Image 1 (cartoon, rainbow, N blue to C red):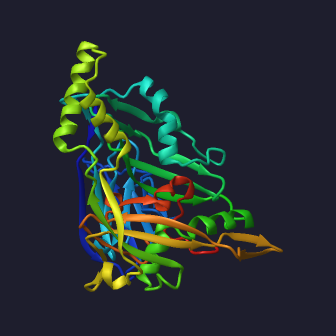
Image 2 (image 1 turned 45 degrees about the vertical axis):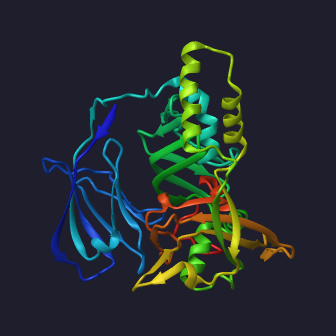
Length: 388
């Protein structure tokens, strides 16, 4: 079943004296107030909830480019950039979700949950299962499309994620999770609100090591024009088609044979089909080479009143990571670094880079390497500062 909802945002022409405060009411489609709507800056600790009469007031940091999120279970999550609503009184009308039949249903089954829950947790949470857990994990729904080898996960409820290592509880609204096992890619997107649960020296140390060398740290360095000063080296990567990887025609033959194989249970696989399958499994579609080293920020960014990531090539990002340690009550870096390598694929698209290290449409920016290892277990609020 698919949930559908209509949302309406009405901005009333009333300007507040304090530009960084947002006020308003959340109502349903018959003008009845909706209480306990979570209203927050995506990815931060800044948020509030609507009162019994639907009213809310939210004080914002002096500078931010975050999305303002209106979220309540059984309603479609609505987001809007804060720049569009600053200094205005809002009337937000949410219509409760209704279930409608889909044309084609890939069922969300208990068997799919059992078969893929560990894959999901590795891909979404990360590997620190001891300290990070989804408290309402059983609310997750799983479906697997065998024909196209695509796993999808949906969360009818807001996920409550407890991260003991970093000292946060995260309200995570999972918008999309999709894994394509045919091309070995996984993508997930959502909105998040952080509540701090503890902040002792051990937790602070874990946060510092999670932040240093992260994608947020890199983009903050880019915004501040301190990429080299902060230990990053950016190289240009050029992709070349791998002649050993199967062609589109060969891949289609492999797919057609797989369908026939299932129907006939024929155990005789032709040698050419075996060869295509072997090359698909063992060879990457592209080979890469470093074609330019130590490129300056001006190569991959542009300024037009705002700062943008604007690059046609893949970027290799090397970082010398010195882990933080706690010695005699003080935080200090180790003397021997580890070199971490990440890859960013702008794919010809342009992304605005914000001061807090976030980017516009971050779910569409493909990354690999160390950046891709940073799952929910390493996720910090966008308003985190080193040492918090």
